[in-house]
Image 1 (tube, rainbow, N blue to C red):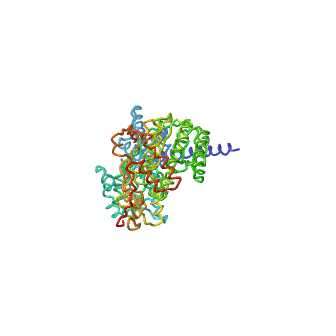
Image 2: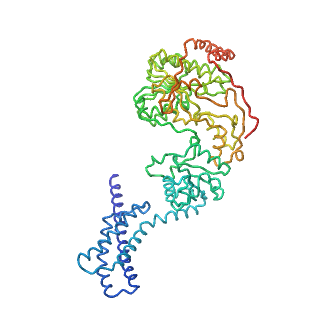
Image 3: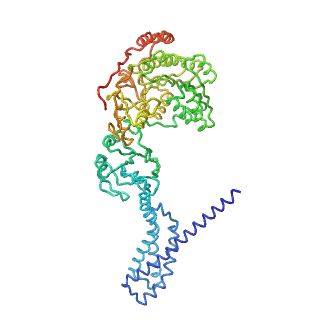
Length: 633
């Protein structure tokens, strides 16, 4: 039943295409007639002698037939009126030159008097111009029509500058001209290459450098910037945002490198400038095929699976072909939604959501024994620094005792590889959370010296967009109209995108590099700068539209974090991929002899004894006293 309408539709489309091509050829024939007549009239000043009039009449049918045949051979009747470009124009000119050459050659070889050479030349230019005007008319008039329609829509166009006058910027402008579904009125380009200044690209002027943006935006009443420089550095992006912070501009960017677009840039690819575009580090380059070879076909258990890091680990494990994933978490609601998400995307993947508490030793042993995972990623932990300062015994129960339970259960089940997700707060810890994560690191590294299971600690800094981190908090505060709260004007943090962080965790944890791997985080970024830039990206003015308020460091927080100690840095090596492997001496069993006492104090709820025991296990641990800033933003 459905075949007949489909056949009919194809037949109608075929008839329409044929009619369209015959119409184009018919118009070309009329152009040839008009051009040859005009050529004779121009050659003889409007009075064609009788003998040349007879020549015109005799040669006209031949020239029309010749032109139409050659147009057919060159395929110029197959034409995309909307997408025609320079190659099509060259093809049309070549068809015209070929026709003129044959038109001259035939009378010569037949030894008959041909048309005057000036007539041949004029006819070529007129015919080619008329045929080109027909074919390019839509391409030339469409942007004007679309601009007129957009200006009459009543929605208001945004006066726009394209940042970057290279290939990507030119293709973006070309798409904007052809598309009615955008609000951008492109005024011109800016580019740091002086050779491009004052040049015209697609009818728009390159007005100056990126440093001129604030001045140009004010003078030209610009409301939107479109970033079309795929390799624009984060530092340069931050400079632009800082310079334009008081102009209430909007920002969009092409998030995909032009190298991967294969010469296809569309306005639909534009996305809002995001906080990750501001990070002062290059994305680590690693081969996904390398990860696939280590993950494909494996049974893997992930604790803390419903959390920000744990859920991204599960997503990437599924993408890289894991055969079976056991999702372990206490948060039943988020675990349910993660299971649904993975099930919808990976229908054949064996998924086992398990509600389990890592503090329940017996439950973990039973779970590991039944699932028999080959790899374990331990991401479950209490991570909120101020809350752990209030309840240090809970931090110990989860981050220390819970980690030990997972380690013991994994070893008993014969797990091949165990990966602990750690934090930069474990370096020179100034908080209970950091100190307990340091104890977990020591516990895992010590076990690595005497177990058949390959144990690895992977340590990194803050991750953009995780639950409770500054980026979603700042977004919420900006959406509410402020204020944006920053703990201290000099507070700095290492930041990394969650996808890159987890990709490197998988690579470091499964690569067999060593039992302590640290992700290279680049340079830390000042949180105050991040707050101001996020306000500017929202089209608002920091401290004017959105106030910034300093609240002081919270209990356990530091002004600056480190991902390695000085000793670890000296004894580290880089295998590449943005990973450093630390080869410091392993902790001895005696160094961890205080863990039973620590866990006993936590079970008893004796906070003073918990803190004292933490200090004895973690040399250098000292709780950071809150620092309150004296002034606002």
